[in-house]
Amino acid sequence: MSFTLTNVYAQNRDAAKDLKEADRLYKNKDYYSAIVLYKFHSSVLKPEERFIYAYCLVHKSSYTQDDVTESINQLKMASSRGYTPAMVALYDTYIANKLVPQDRSQAVTYISRAADYEDSVGLFIYGSLLNAGDYISRDTVKAYRLLVKSAEQKYYNALYTLGYMHYTGSK
Image (cartoon, rainbow, N blue to C red):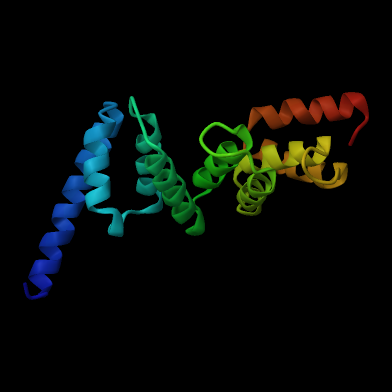
């Protein structure tokens, strides 16, 4: 098959059509069918699509360790391209000890990266960890700064935490 501009355009159009269908299948919770399309086009997935592909892999009715590994890989690829929901999902995965063995160091690495990107959830979780001294050294000054940034983005859990910090005098 020769790679002419027409062929490349046709392939991209087909991929876009398939990925739109995969998104529809995902929204209808037909994870098995969505996985087939995401896997087929895995070389051209955007970070958001990698995130959804990862979700589908571990939310179908039964999944294998290979599915978990592929899901983590897809989340890491999305994270490496700056997609903060993937960073938060990796934090949750490594802290929860459900899909993979707990790894607090990895969890903190991903949530601090999400905070570096100023993701409201990342700022809140990392700020809360710093405030409590969970898994990392306690730093209430930095925690307060991060929680304020999260609250400014209208993440209401941050407002509650700031109020509690003020009430207890821990800021």
